[in-house]
Length: 95
Image (cartoon, rainbow, N blue to C red; front, top):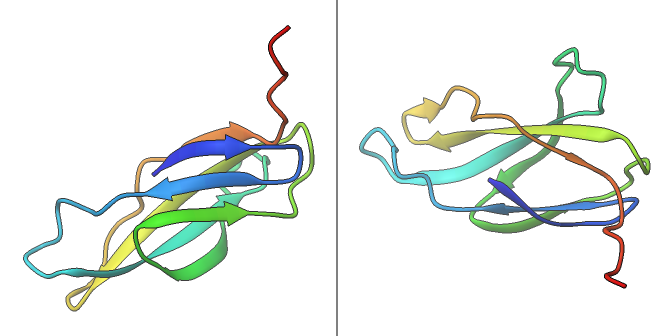
């Protein structure tokens, strides 16, 4: 998972296919978000993602958000992914 775009109220995340799948095809991903508390207070954002992009909306400008996922296949759900963090902010234009 990587951040590919952001503005003051949304962050766009890109998901790739998971390489390590335990021998069973990944069915979907579940996205979790910590609203900048830095206390690992993750809440479910969306369940049923596959690969591609997902836009997290309704964010507060200037806050740093933390994201992580789990992958699910016919065996079950994985442990949490590595955390990705990003500020909800519009990137300034070049002069």
